[in-house]
Length: 298
Image (cartoon, rainbow, N blue to C red):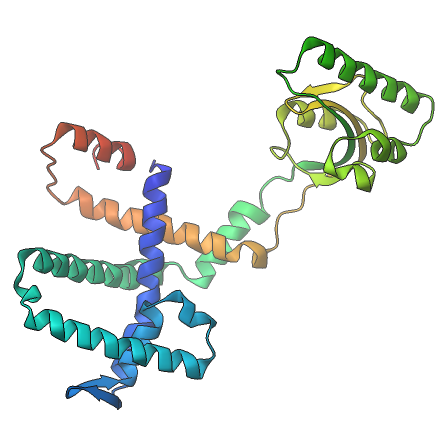
């Protein structure tokens, strides 16, 4: 299993790679020369590439200004590049290493575009959603309200006891028929107080364990017989409703599913490449650090 950091880096690499084809395609199709800089032509394709590769602030500009900003940036790039060329920068070892890296990075992007992206079709995304999300067993979710008497776990004992006593008194009022929402608005230290303590619907894993366990154990219309202690203080909980938790609509999670499948396909392809490669890392500490990211034997 890949560690989170490995997946994060791979996701970044995939996103960068998939952003490249549109720009390369535009460059190939748009050869019209729109300007020259000391005789060096600038084409429509160059402008399209600059718009996709340069400052993200370009995206917020109107189309005409975006095009002009890209051309202005290209003019500056060509002038500065020419000055660096004349200064001999292109012959320096450090610069050549960087160029080698950029070339390999571009080839990596092409690998993603040609070998990874085509496998993640719209049909594959929909099929994964249908199998893994839509068909998953439904779990229950609860709609609950609460009244929080806030007190820190490290608070002095007398403060703890006073908070517990106040929570007990509120439960006594509820047992006597008092309105839960009115007591929440009057006593609760939570932001939900203005809504009568209503927290809306939530499923497993959304609340702190003590609160979740108590909420799911109550029947609809029932309030907790004892204050529920959590890291936030003492809660009095009332369950308003229970219902089967509905899976998110396909449109809501389509992009997340696509990203997941892209990542999984990428790792599968790269794993195959690694299996056929001879990779030696001479520094033991560095080798251990790499294996901590990628997993041993990779």
